[in-house]
Image (tube, rainbow, N blue to C red; front, top):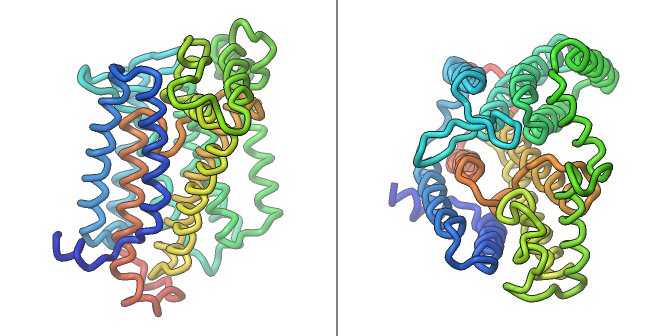
Length: 374
């Protein structure tokens, strides 16, 4: 392991982008309450996530190309999502967590990474005949199963990310735009069916508050309203570290997770927000560079899916924090408090870094789908 680390196979520019984002989250948590458990626990989670990243990056992950292994992961994820409805803990109306006492685990986070692997395998094996509609339908079915199980929790934010991952990977697979339109039509009909015959009244109320967050600013729209105030009050240079009144006076809830961008921007202003955008842009740019250098189509599709997941999380989180999108409860990648999403993100990057180890030795087989078989 240490010999492989010494070979300097890492994309160090990704670290250049991630470290300031992680630090921004820690500083924001610490500035509001230095004795808060959020700050201490987040440091521990960052340390664990980094160890996972290093360990995964030092192994040969080409076994992930095997269909049997990927489908085993997919089956485990689906089983965990089903088990949530029996053993899951309900928090703020959503049954999305397994409460293990000493920690809470959210299966929807690793489900996103597993879906990326499944779709990367599927599209890489059928890249030549991808315009056949049945391949679009089958790939959509893989995503739809996970989407429905997450949507019914109800966790609308994560279900949106599932659709975004599928759509992003479908776009680069070279499918017909007409087929995409047909599939979206089928999805719309399925949603109407869920709304009419499946969803309970309390679940419909969550969807309605999702679509109209400002309809009741003293009730369901309170979080979105306070978040927009926090972002705007930061102005150009911010109020200074530790002087974010919306968070310190507890007007802005969950500043350490769902609204950490608003809390950060209130203290650092638009300049701080632009720096955050810059560093995140560096991370996404380098992931796409690694996608281009992938040894096979599988590695390329995986990197594209990983970038899509990060972009979707970042866009929706920022959009909800500035009042441009309904509140979804999505975390900011590498910045928000929580272990499940951090482990998933660093695990994904660890797999990407491992793929760099053999990207050159087998670059010539990228157009030979038969070599991708298990």
